[in-house]
Length: 274
Image 1 (tube, rainbow, N blue to C red):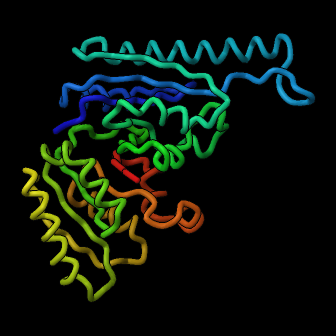
Image 2: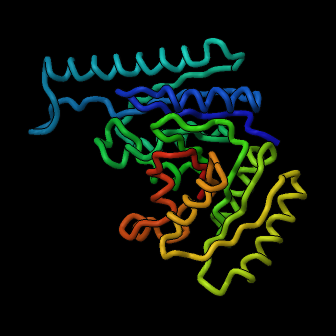
Image 3: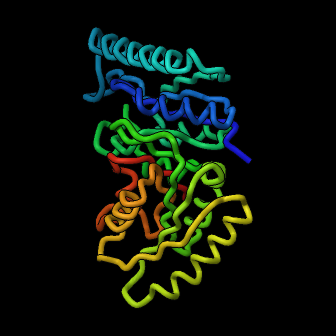
C-alpha cells in the first residue's frame, strides 16, 4: 500500500520551494508519479463596467503567462535530480479553482498543497484550502510556508470517533507504516480512562496494519487545537493526521477549531481528509 500518484498544487506569484521539497521526498519514498498543477482565472475582458480593456488586458494576460511559466520551471527544477515520472497541467478557468483542482485529482492518491493562504487573497489566483478539502475526495497533505520537517517518522493522529477521522486514519496508513505514531484524543476531565480503552482498540487496529502506535488521551484545556499542538511539540511529531470539518464548515471558521488551525498552521505538515 502506498501513494503511487501525487498531485502537487503550486501557487502563482510566490516561491513553492518547501512544498516541492516535501513532494520530492514523498515521490522518492513511494516511487510515485507527480503531477504539478497550477490554476487561475484568466483576466476578464471589458463587459459593461467590469474587466480590463486593451493594453491593460494584454499586460494582465502576459503577467499570468509569466507566472505560470515561472511555476513550471520551478517544478521541473525541483525534480531535475530525482528519478520521477512527471506531468504538468496549467488551467485557466473562470470556474471555482478548488473545483478545477479536484477534477485533476481523479488519478491522484494524495494531494500536496500549501497551507490556506488562498482564503485570504484574490480567489482568481489563490486556492481556498478549505474548499479543496471539502471537494477533492482525496487526502490532502498541507505544507507550511516555513521549512517543515519532511522525515515523517513521528506522526500524531488527532483522534475523534467520527467519520472524517476514520477516513483520515485509513488515508494516512502509507505514512504511518513507516513512522512512530501517537494516537491522541482530547477529552473532558474525568473521561481519560474511557478514552484510553477505545484508543487502545484503535492502536490494536493500527498494529494489524503494521503501524507502531500508542494511545495518548489528554484532558482538555478548552482549546483542542492548542492541546494537539502541545502534544505534537512534546512528542516531536512532524505531521498531524486528522479528519476535517467534524462540525459544519461555517461553525469551524466562525468559532475556530482543529480544522481551521491545521489549514492555517505555520509549523508542521498536516494530512487531512473529509
